[in-house]
Image (tube, rainbow, N blue to C red):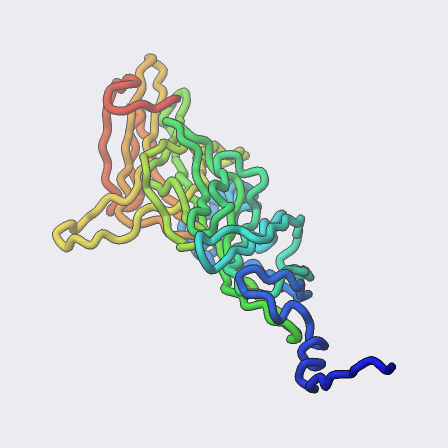
Length: 335
């Protein structure tokens, strides 16, 4: 007896020959695909213009040199570390793949193998070493957030932080390369003080009015509270006017106000404490009437007088002086 051979149509053989991952639903696909990701840092900043405009005198050379050195890791097109996440575009935007790399370059390529499907890709650069910033809730795309520490007084951030978002559709059987541009999300300020003939013992500078968090997926800044940022005093050598320079690195301030009646809105401010030789402290508040935007540097110069009060060089800056100021009079500043 010969076995009975039933007729099997040609289309059945063709189906069996196709890759198995074609029959897996997109949401649970497990067929991996190799593709290339090209990352590039994109720094769009006013740093050079601001330095040339605000610190253009011969007497400003020492301050400018110190400030440029201080901001070397802030306004930079070189990324040290990158954090790469790939999220589901359906459901609750769960992270499906995660990698970290030391990039140490202005641009770099990575070859990845992840399942064929659609993703929302999020990249972050220079998170390591920024002690005041924490990446929170990054297991889900719509909740991923760069959160500043919660405290009355904070140290500045010390690196330029960059982020990127890119929808990606990984397809089977197609050679693909994706280009990802990373853009800066924090900013910097500098206050230059002419202390010649003031004879103050010490000066401490703080700034406030900046965002406290950044929603990565939506590129949205949040203002949850009003921390005080302690400015770093730079090492300025051999300055002929006894100029001091204080700098902060932080999130931007709020944007332009929508209310037309507010002709001079205050976006952020400096709080400067001059310690006099008689043991008293003078507080000067400098109210800045223009916003501090992402990737921007804002430099302000001011004169310090014998009573510790400051006079800013910009006439649009509001000034409020409290002589014989004592901690706790109006607000809590840990000095």
